[in-house]
Length: 206
Ligand code: HEC
Ligand code: HEC
Image 1 (cartoon, rainbow, N blue to C red):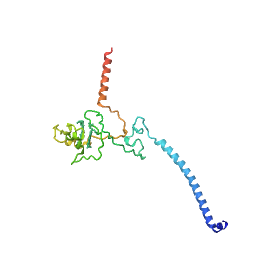
Image 2: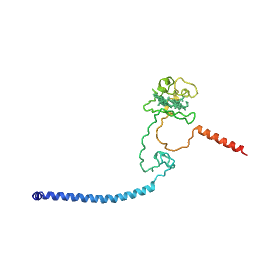
Image 3: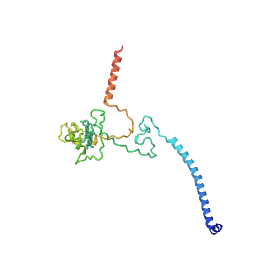
């Protein structure tokens, strides 16, 4: 053993020097890292104090500042990169939704991926043409879709109603970006009626 040590002496010295050096570098790095981490922490605190986005509890995403014009940024300052939202899924439940007023184009209750609508073909009309309603059990487009601008009825779909997605849209499960106070016409009429009733009752009481 002693003999072996004596023979490899320079090698052992070199090895222990290397190990010692590595330990020194590690300690130096650790000390330096601790220092700069403290600095970063302080910077983060200052940044947070200055840039905390104003939130309103009534906004759908909980992060939308009313003064922020673009709700897509969700109140994140313009000099910071926003983490992207997940891609929302198209609702494909085949359940018709309420229409908010008489002439609202109904929203599409099924997915429309790959349904081509161009000059040569209209995939939507495969199912929604009057003639195909029986086969596909789809509601045929209403009579307004066959009317030209002079209210004349055409035999085929009017060019004004050819590009379905101009008016009809799918719905996704995304939360609303900006809250609104929209009421359906029925709610408005009911409120107006209740208001009139109260006013009349007030008039009747002496
Ligand atoms: C494969 C047949 C098929 C195709 C193609 C199709 N639909 Fe439909 N669509 C239906 C059926 C069936 C319904 C009835 C509800 C349901 O089962 O989804 C419907 C419902 C609708 C409704 C709801 C009507 C209401 O009264 O609420 C709209 C709007 C609509 N489709 C628009 C479109 C548009 C726009 C396209 C083309 C991008 C299209 N559809 C393509 C079968 C189809
Ligand atoms: C310019 C806007 C517009 C375009 C383009 C349009 N629609 Fe409509 N659609 C409406 C409106 C508004 C209604 C509801 C009132 C009505 O029936 O006219 C409607 C109603 C419907 C309905 C329900 C019919 C019913 O009787 O309940 C279906 C189905 C429909 N559209 C499918 C289509 C398809 C398929 C296309 C493309 C070929 C299309 N629409 C293009 C505006 C449009």
